[in-house]
Length: 233
Image (cartoon, rainbow, N blue to C red; front, side, top):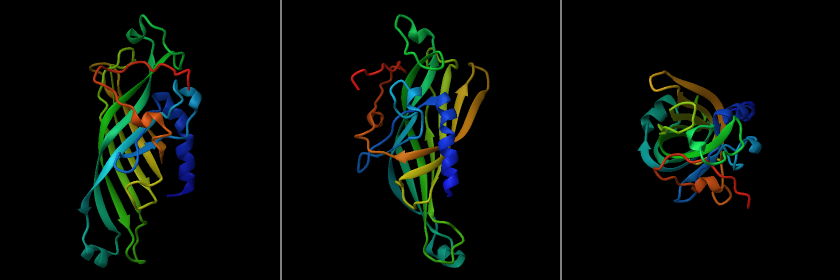
């Protein structure tokens, strides 16, 4: 993983916030590890929080290749982990039914923002070097599916999601300090119309959930509600 890739990741966040306005992530040590998009314009979100957060717990499922393969082919020793957790994202919503009878937050574009929480599942594969002759670079790969399939009143599309992330790290561990990710957010334009997807590179940084309120957000099944700015900080 090259540092110029990180520069590309950071530079893509402005475009990403236009679709998703950040959501918050997870904690460490038995309560899930929290990651957040940390490079973004805070003025573009109604609560100043990150546009996307993921929080997960990783379970070791075992080795995915054998010691004989490592010896014969010099590939890295690989371990597989299953993930469960949650994700939260802020979506820009145009003024619509959801704003009737109440003032909408003055956010771009022409409406308010809703923070939506959902479940996630995924897999991490780590590769650790056991021989100097290996052609592979050690690190970790992660695939995540955030199960957003929800109707939101006032949203220009009747359904949002799901969101898929493919991530990599130079650290051969399940909780690296930083994930480089490609993210695909799907938006359904109409009940019968096709689904459009936006794919962008982003970065997810491990954060302290005590410092990022969105990491602990829980949402009931009543649908997405407008985020009301907290004037008390």
